[in-house]
Image (tube, rainbow, N blue to C red; front, side, top):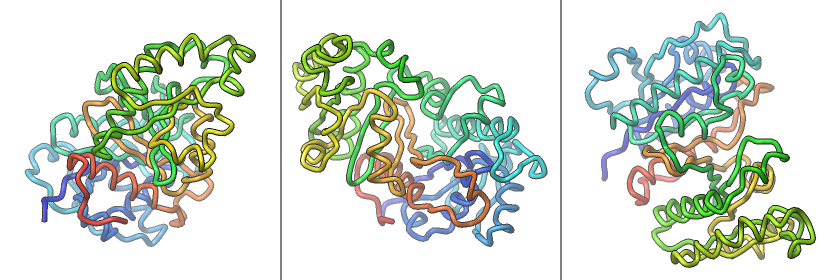
Length: 340
């Protein structure tokens, strides 16, 4: 049996469901068969959530300043970042303190990945209002990881067994989407998507690209000819580069089974164009990936679920799937030992 990679998990927002998801990962036999999970968080938070929910887990606690000298970690562990005091956390409530703590966990995990101490980072959900209250100048994980790693070409991918999508733009308002489109950006996302899927599938993927306007613009009838200005030149260049890609596709029919089953992934132009169909089909099992980074990063595809935080009822399947994908990427696309 191949050695298990060490996978870093970030605790996410302490007031959300991230702590209980991490507790479940630390004790899940199928996760432990695939990797050695190491959580970056606060030991006091994890202990308190364990007491409240009854989710007991067996793990080693490492001080942050001991982490670099701990040698090879071969049992589940928590790196104690001491980023927040438990008395300042109100379950289900956004706060600057929780936003700052969530950001600290990410920074420490990214640094560990850059040093090669962990094979990849799997993130529990963060809360955008808490990040903003803490003065963190990034709207979400994708932007944080790009900034911390200095990556110049990144995009978000959502992957599941029934649908995979990637996004040209993410956390911007609808009115801003056309302004952020360009031939270069569309081509970049096509290429990043193709590269990632080739690594996962070990074959050339089949990609579709959604249009921006109703009926993909209907040859200029709708919109400002974004399809002709940005999408068609990018598609032509991608094909010239040897990629298997079709489009622009009318997005109102791109996600029906007969269409989506023709492709290994669909490239979407804005957040809800991809997120709405994806979450309808794979809310509990989807995985969020950031493509183009020098490190592996996967994540759950759901939020902090403040309404059920610290109750022990959060569904861990998306986290388990994210760990699974991180392990497969760390192993170069090879099949992991066990499947949740």
